[in-house]
Figure (cartoon, rainbow over the protein chains, first blue to last red):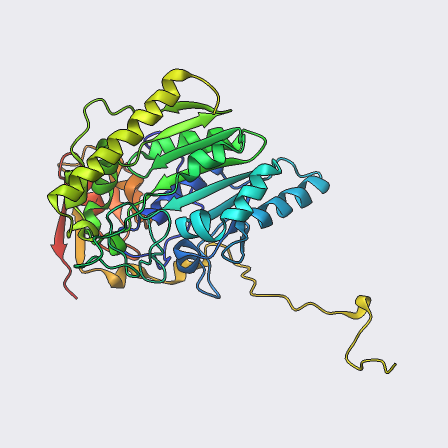
Length: 298
Length: 99
């Protein structure tokens, strides 16, 4: 154990992720927490492409690649097959990026959670389809420029808000839903271990920086992820049986400008837009706080 | 009604096996160290052995040796610089890679 994290690596080096990839770091730490007694089902996306250039693989656990939209439904099938074989100690983990989770595979995930399947779904959220060239997804933050809607004179960046998938899945009566970030690796470890121990559908969304798509220095990747937490842009909370708990309470938030200025995808923003984003972030935080303090079930 | 020639009874149907990789962790054959433009160097005198560089490496390229010191595995290090940026005592310096 180093820093309270296991030393075993179930994700091998030599993968083709860009230098400073937050997603690869998130995967590495999720696997450290799950251990080897799992079956991974992965949707198409960056983390699938970089980890399985045929005939090589970075995975040291059983791994299946399925179509973009079917990670969660396939995982439920694998979980049921394992149950029939009496191997209920083996957990099925589905991985997907935000494209697979928020857009393309959303119906399948919703069905899986509605059927109360015994799987854990991990979403690597970096806010766009980074693998195919930074196209807009419904996880792209407000104001960001993406290749399918580049900011210019007419379009001031994305005009819509990020889809609140964690809250939507919690509303499916999921026993455990959490958001995490690669800026706190011990927190990822704790949340994944917690989800692993729960029977039923669990969801963990990990905010992970993509230096290539966010247009930031690869060395600053973790620093930018930390800024997302400190500015309340990426709030970290967990929802257990509908009860919201903010795990990282930011009492003195930094202005959102610090986070936005660190990335090229926000460089076009005007002071008015930054003010608007600050307003949205404050509103979202107030909503979470209210949910937490009310103590009622979501 | 003429029977279709290509229709086979179900038990004779053959499913082709898709792409199967039998060797776990086989990307270790791919030495990504060649991508590096900047090279991290750990100053062992300054290092406090906290392991933050080890934990934050996306390429599993910081390793602990028998002496308990952390060292960089240059076979796979892509030179992203996260370790140098996160080091609390600035014991890791990024140098330009000479090839």
